[in-house]
Length: 142
Image (tube, rainbow, N blue to C red; front, side, top):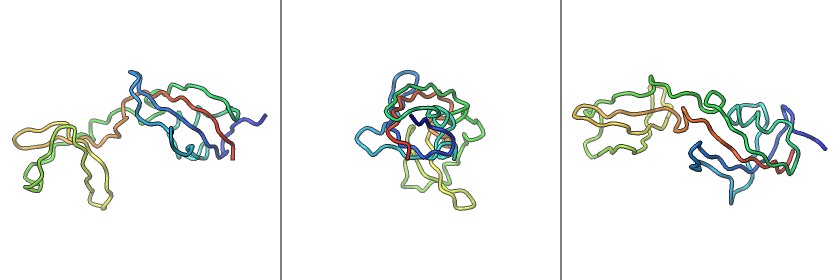
């Protein structure tokens, strides 16, 4: 029976959980995720996790931080002057906002702190710094 190798396009169902058991994503109720193994379409640990799987096989993989979204980068946590916020905007801790940089690229940030002068924004990926666990089922090798 054929097994997954680098360069194969595959379809998988998955259930992603943090170490504490909290689900952060799942393909349940959706079409299987399709990607090309080794093409950088998914995190490295997920790519590596499907290697050598056979169609119909199920397995659980633990992905360390460095093969997931990497460690939290403190340089991506910044204090933004409240004076630069539109007056009608009332940010709250935990709120997710979109910002753009000088090149016009849009990115998501999370409000993680508020004081008199600044709001503190975290531009790290929401799963940065987290080891991840995936239950994976190989549906098809395309």
